Image 1 (cartoon, rainbow, N blue to C red):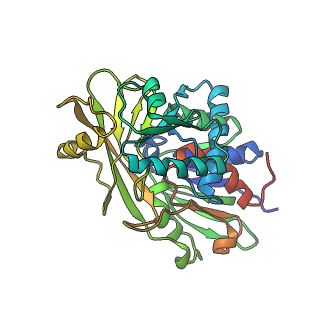
Image 2 (image 1 turned 90 degrees about the vertical axis):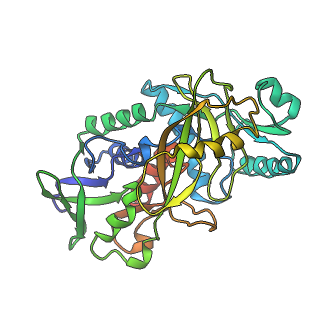
Image 3 (image 1 turned 90 degrees about the horizontal axis):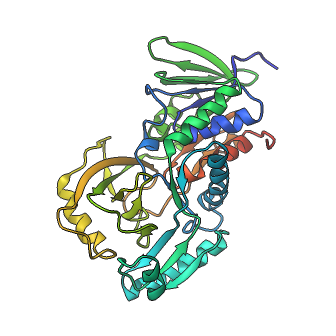
Length: 373
């Protein structure tokens, strides 16, 4: 076997990239994770809901269905083992009109098919007994859903990689890679101290930069790079006491799960995200959007006081489906997809990517032909 600087290079030190690095480190490989920002988790991973998803909605046979449920189970065990804070508060999916009640039945059936534990159908009275300020005609309870400290999780992943002899290299953008004769890659890294390194394996998990990174790999087929779409979501924070203990979600909307409620680990209430497609990375929160949030939230919480919401933050999701198009599945493309041995390229890793991250790492290792850890 050729002598490489690292067994594997991973592009992107968000939750998914770090989870991929951890999966390889668990198999005894030395890993270098390249990150263009000056800290880990500064992209998609720092601008989301920090929700642990149960895995209710995703179509049978999809990667999202498989990896969300598997990843959630792995995630709770990892958080316990590494003493990372979380709240397994449970989630209510609420029907606010009689017409939506039938939609709950189909969501329940899909959740059971997906092997989501503990799902329950609740009558209006049962839902109100759990959350008296709620307005609904019925609900589903997913007791395995929760919220967690995603940054603490990423720090724990980084620690595991480094403890196994790997490195998370910050302020070091990926500039390109060339497959080598006989296997492996020459990887070009930029930054203040540009370097060229070699590795047996390469995994690209850079979130919003996935298409550009794939295009910078020699011989990567252009027709295997999906078109990128930016799905922007804004969040608003509530002044005053959080009204609910559970996560509260409406039934999904086209392209997303809908504007939902969560109580964060600090005890504050946050609503979001909404969804709009944008052409550039714009993280501003438009205060005028509050009007739409008030009307939407009052469908399930009529007691929302006037002037109680303030702009909080925005995130952008790396979608590979555009407005009006069907939901896309995760793309975890190994050699069978693009023809380059030793390479796995990830595309469209949006929600439930954070929940699924440990299982995504395992799937990437599987795509490389590596044995289970």
